[in-house]
Image 1 (tube, rainbow, N blue to C red):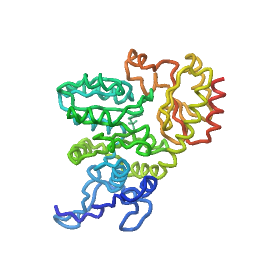
Image 2: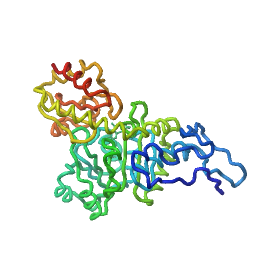
Image 3: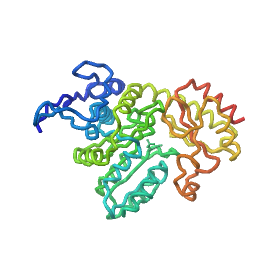
Length: 376
Ligand SMILES: Cc1ncc(COP(=O)(O)O)c(C=O)c1O
């Protein structure tokens, strides 16, 4: 079919700084009408003007201009070749592990989001893939664990929830030496703070539900690849699994991304102050904070104190998730990391006294005052 493609090319805006790129996205304005807010193309299908003449769009499961604008925006921000927007972070991860074949082996961070662990252990293990979990900071033992069947390193940095930081260039060197794909889950820092593809990673994955969206109102996932050779796989995943992000949700994410830089600065600033305060609190026995971004975990003096905190917070909300405007406290042992076997959780330090907090963009005095009254 010949294509009369309306949105076929876009300016990657290489000359702009990051804070401008988040505002101006892929195409930015819609080129035909000049709409400043990129429209929501709420359509299932697209008319062909004549036999053998297409606009480049056929059916929204395959391509949709609003989703494409988001995908292009994320490719620009992560400095990758192409982006893909999925119906959730889990769907994005499923598509990443969809690169595996039976017999393949993957090494992941030993401390990862419970849902990622579940995908590996409950779905891909049954398809004949094998998974090892290691501290990604210990590069010598990591290299020793690589087998002839190893295909991928999958890293969260900082990790969820222990905030362990990995050295991406060091991991990229190992991946290159052994011909492995390096995948980085960049949910916690976003390209505002960290661009893994520029440090040697092959694939970046996000729960777009978190900081990219920023408003706790969308479930979304993003993949950005460094190399054209990976593009076809992800196109096929979206086309065949039908797990692409819907037009309205793509628009909400585009809208959220416009303020990504402002929000990340505020999350970071607030978290720094809260971490300092928590570090001096007599009930806080251990503090886990990467020194950057909006996420903090901590261990309290007792299970009772932890339960009281979750029940007594007033402005802060006791809820699963992270990265939104609102400060959220989460109880990993029964929420985000419920799928991880208890012995592994305890070895990591995820116990009944352990709390994760996503610092929002409220006035930090109110966040601290709320924690203070709940930790009395
Ligand atoms: C680091 C990380 N990756 C992936 C996911 C999965 O994303 P979603 O909930 O959007 O499916 C999460 C969710 O909490 C997460 O924290």
